[in-house]
Image (cartoon, rainbow, N blue to C red):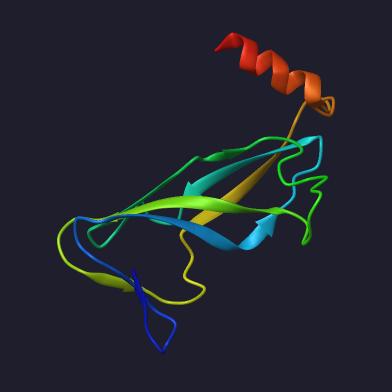
Length: 116
């Protein structure tokens, strides 16, 4: 991966990249977030991502700054391209839930581990 002096990230063809957002997201308890591609095919580049952020995503971090970056999966198929600094890869849509959910606790993680 190469970033040039103009802060452009060069994406090589047939390579797979995991890119994090510059912005950090912190979701309150009554909100769910869906990430929708600005354009799923930008030229020959495909942008994929885990398109959902659950309530409490990025909240109550033990480290600062607050919030958590979103992660994007990017792959170029035909020829090298470059992304400029601050290029938009997705649009976030915020949805009010019918009721606030309870804050997950450590015991909830243990339940997930037991299911495996």
